[in-house]
Length: 299
Image 1 (tube, one colour):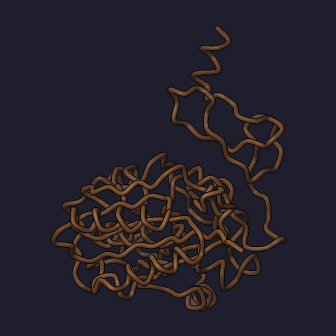
Image 2 (cartoon, one colour; image 1 turned 135 degrees about the horizontal axis):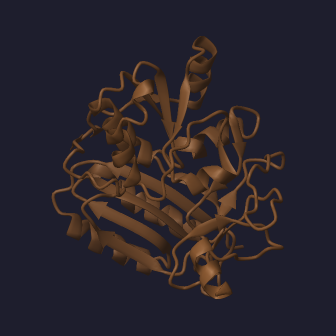
């Protein structure tokens, strides 16, 4: 019986020929019938793939056969299904691209990478070590490294959620001094699988934040260990057709529908095809337009 799976992964390592990596990953992905998105740069690779379990296991063996990727932390989760040809229903196609950054902070010149990963990033904390830090220190600050929409349906308790629409907004906010009051506090950055915090924590360290941590493996690894019994609240936003995932049947629903105010963990795109806005909106309200397009339609 076919088993649909999704893998989430990234590696920071110097890659002398990103284009060669792109061709390799495109060819093996197509041969195995995989779908998803991969971004490659001179600093490493970032991706998520969906497909049949056996196909993804073959991909993982090949991926780790390349020395810089040998120790890659590949996170596995359940896919929502496969089509008649065994291709993932969670992604429309396979996209493999080379870009300046594998996560778009808009600061490729600031990032330094060696064979061990990002240079000058925050101290890594396992989920268990995170709990120990919180127990030992009363002034720990959780700093959400995702876009603000993602945090609307799930976040760590009492976390600071910057007002960001894209990852590029973080550099502007940090440089504005908006969070300078945190420079003498223990700050724990967190994100979905860990990649955004690799970069974010290094940006914070270089701007004078004195005690910066990053949750190793991100929310995904934390949820695997503690589920909804720890410091996490709500659902985890994911960038595929599943929309979000829960770590248990006891997950809190903390999102609020912009249409009716009901509790929901559902997100949807603005129905106007020219708009890229996304909202937290319940199934009853469906897709709601952003204020700009709602006003235009009313007029």
